[in-house]
Length: 115
Length: 235
Ligand code: SF4
Image 1: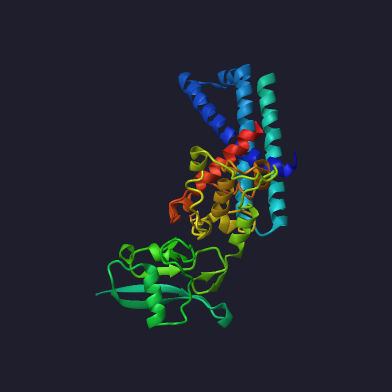
Image 2: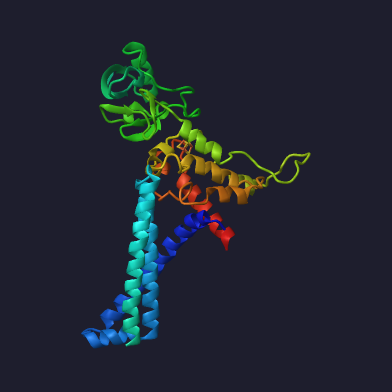
């Protein structure tokens, strides 16, 4: 499968699946938070140390980064039509930024889950 | 009888200068008159240099697509009685203007050609007709009626942004017309051709196409069905 194969249908599918997952996650998370009033720092950490919460939260952030990638890529492809090099530059910047965010998120998640 | 005001886009690149809107006043407007009739009369009675395309005069040939008060449509089937005054008449947007209301449709036809709008068989030609059941034939309704006027594609922001890469609603409607045809055997190749971020997937379901189509067709729906078929064949 060529790389251009991944860039049309797959991107479109990723956008939709990540949107559905994030919507469900936000609803579930809101329900959890609302049903336990009076969170303090310790109970907040305990919540995210639970494997189920940690895993679903990690998937949420993966979905978020993928969703941002497809969405911002769409905006770049739409509005920066004329100049391929400008498009490449912006897509690279976006990629670097998302990878940095990803590393940062992994660090936070690891610290929350391991300690 | 009634008098109507028209502001018509005028531009002649060969003469240089800038495009401008020219005011025309037309009297003796009949109740049933269409916009095309008014343009013909303005050209005959007031300014013979006014240039526009038209032919059949009844919404079949698809040659008089213009932008009427901001919305694309066919001049020949747009009743003057429905239009706010002054009627602003412009060429369809997003296309190079050749003169006044006449645009260069090259790009549009290019995309149409690229979707191979004809039946392709891989098996050897058979000696008899290719039969279709009534149900198979029904699948082509809402697709084959397209008159290639270009109202939809030139109303589509995705086409304005990427006119060289995005196929546009009209071509994609025809792509689906042949994907949906039980006699066509080129499905895999057709879908493969539309893959990638641009040709099909620049569509963001804005739906201007379905809003303006003078034949009441729905290219957005056809595009959705192409995506569905792609997905089905992936899994
Ligand atoms: S789909 Fe409708 S608006 Fe588009 S080219 Fe065909 S007839 Fe014209």
